[in-house]
Image 1 (cartoon, rainbow, N blue to C red):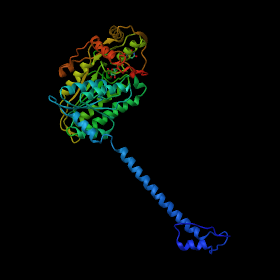
Image 2: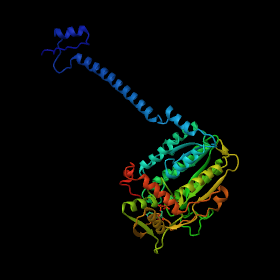
Image 3: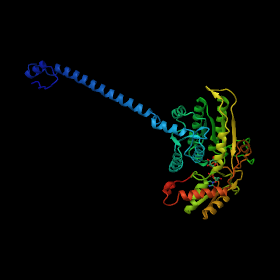
Image 4: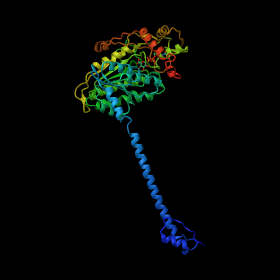
Length: 441
Ligand SMILES: O=C(O)[C@H]1O[C@H](OP(=O)(O)OP(=O)(O)OC[C@H]2O[C@@H](n3ccc(=O)[nH]c3=O)[C@H](O)[C@@H]2O)[C@H](O)[C@@H](O)[C@@H]1O
């Protein structure tokens, strides 16, 4: 049997000669001795190419890890924008981090602070609980005023660390939260994530800061829960919440106390009462009712178990802004450093309401008057999704300490809201489609 001709450019010339001369005979069934040579050579080549493959994969993994770990915030343009936004102008006394700056209350207070010269940096995760376009539009108003909003989540420790390293915040106005009473039935963990996890992440960062900032944050009238004593005073019971949302806000107040007690953080809680106004939240009744009335769709009005009407202490945004700014102005510095408190720090809780509760039916009548259109009222029993029958704020303490004095009655406030709504959503303004398909919970 003839030995097959082997043409192999890498082979030793002697061997090539041997094969070509066909002088090497081998017996049938025994492997050709050269096959060992080929086998080992192929193995070495395979190992070599495997090594190359491994090495390349290793490089890819390293590059991927580096790129994915690399914070999107670690570039010079981002740092410059944050620093510029934090600069105080003439008359400014503080440098404030406003969380939830693209939100309803956050955007209004940010503008008010910037206007008087304070340094303001915003933080917002732009979540899609309601149409994000509205948040973007608010953010663009802030940008025009020179306020930069960092896009990121409160739970991102690295981001907070980076921000606090870059800017020495004298104050934190913490308004970022998962809002809305009824949506908590649908997505309870969103509330735990933002209102509890996010708050603790922020408190941890503040406690570690040197010097520590003073904190003012949003609590809620909902902490009064099933309270039947009216008006609600800050010292009333808040241990029987009616919704998970309220429970997380109550948790915030308790957590705040702990950080104040252990680490000397100066903390002020503001219990907001159903805040409304221009640039508001589309999930809230005044907004969604307006939309439905304008579009000729029915509105759903909840009723108590014995046919009673629900009532809210609706509070206009301008009054809330004044309350927030006054709280920041009167906040004393924190007293801790190095993870320890050096003396007792300020701890305050205030109601920020309007002190004039209005029944939901009457509030709809006021809306009808301003919209010059009748609502199609669909009255149904209140679903068991966390609403309470009424809210009513006693603001004596805020009046005394903050000079808080709500001055916008519901009719005036709704008139301002309706004017804004009509101009913002008018045909041709480019915002008509923003709420298309959106249904509040
Ligand atoms: O004061 C507060 O602490 C809370 O105020 C509002 O919560 P809420 O008062 O329930 O405000 P809306 O959702 O605007 O409801 C206003 C009233 O309209 C009623 N409503 C709402 C929706 C609806 O379809 N029908 C209806 O009758 C509610 O039961 C309530 O009495 C906010 O959504 C919360 O984020 C905030 O914390």
